[in-house]
Length: 300
Length: 268
Image: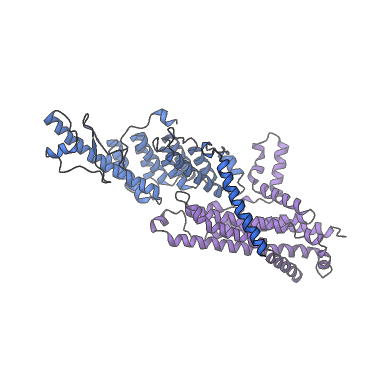
């Protein structure tokens, strides 16, 4: 019996040692393998699952989220998000009621490059697929309006989506006035705040909630930046140049101290143009005030 | 009836003695428990993943046990020649088939109940841990009793698969029985494609053959309501009843055919 145990331990230790030796000599370059999806057709995927379609949808959803995460966190100069939409398409075909895949998927697809593929067209297409399956879900119309408003800056289309959402059962009352506000004032901060606040309050997903809270802080920062740029302009009117630092505005009595963004990081000022912004190392950087991404970026 | 119960009892005792069934059910319970960890890999939808995995594991393990035990139900008795001693007692061949079927079905249903209980235990834990905010985002409650409809229909599906396995087991080798049962299981889930084969192939004759196969073979697709119950979509009692009734009739056909073939089989 003891001999058996000794032999077992000797074999086990030798096997582990051989594994360690092999590991050092035969490392495969797995990092260089591009991610692929073998089943490109959502319909075929559904057929071959033999009643396990819902489970396979979960697997594809996990893969989509991890694919997005890997691409976003990669240090590569050209981040590749090409498989995100096919993965989400297969997920939602396998399980057409996969609510979070439509809502979360649309957010991931529309996120601007390099944080996402910057493809609002695909985000809207995914949401339209969800609407086809569940036409009573006002949230999909709301999300489509959000994509139009925030990423495409198409305020008319955004307002139309919100009006459609407002007519659905259980839709909140604020949708209609927000739609009217969008149509009347375009990209005003109040409408953006209403949309983000809704996402922050109603989403059950931590990622969406924290993303929405960050966007709300960015909106606060934008409002402060407008005030700071106004003060910098006053400094320019008095001295003929923009301030080199906030200290100059403090010394001039225009500010009481170094202005800090909502995360506690000092704002930056450009002494040439007088433009203020959050610091590059602030968690709020970059602010989303820029225009929609160019067409070339959308095709990426 | 007593003869059937005696044969069924023998099958049930055999399945308890066989550790492989234990192992499979233990694996399923472990898989369901591990789904809590798996759910951490994704953003949200952990409850859906646990429900999906729980129901899918119950079906997959059930089908495996059904085929693994079903293929040997008759063939093993014939090979070991133990069938002679059984049939020398006051047991007809039809009662032998019915008893074998009943014994395996009872085993399967008990295993299914264990797996369903494990799934509800994990879901209960999730419900206990969830915040009210998270609960509000769920499509359906964690301990949704409507999931029992899916569990019940999985039970019916396992009964159909067992009947198919037993049918092949009466005249074929275990390996061939397993292959044929798997083939019918696959075809059973392609019911809609068979019915509408005319849209895929130009030949009218082939389309007719497809339609005939669709009506003759048991259609397993209506027994799959896992996707619906996970999202809290109502599955009508009428659907459950009709699907069960239809499956019951196919089971009747398969058992009758099994008894017919076995009663004509020359065991010498």
